[in-house]
Image (cartoon, rainbow, N blue to C red):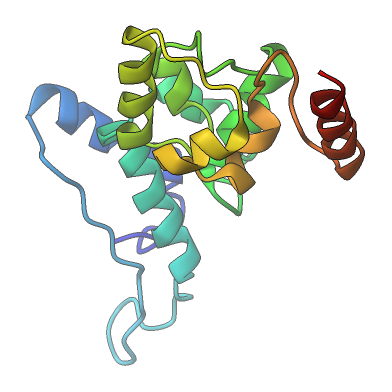
Length: 180
């Protein structure tokens, strides 16, 4: 139950869950936002927002399916050791790509691809499969057909040595492609 204990942070919950994944072979964690019930000892407490429960599920997915490390999560926590509002994967990507260059899907490892929002395990495996067949991704549309959500991934990828993040970049890329 998330939020029943007032001083318990998201980091406390995530550390406990990660430990259970590592040491107890936990298969999956479940979260439920605390809802006070009038007339009980905790009836005067504030309800926990469902958004917090949702962020913990998203973060659990990153730990369990994407195999993110706890250090990745620690980097984005607020001063109260809670997850920030919004998608945790987006926050981690913003933090990670401040110090790293954009990813070329033709050269990236599976683990690197999973750092990009809009690329999940299935599309990352498809990209790696194409790499092993020496197929080069040259256009954004190819990524879209693989299953990459370009709206989320665009600003973290480079294709043919460039990336597309603004309308000006889009027109410059299109003009350059026409000239070539």
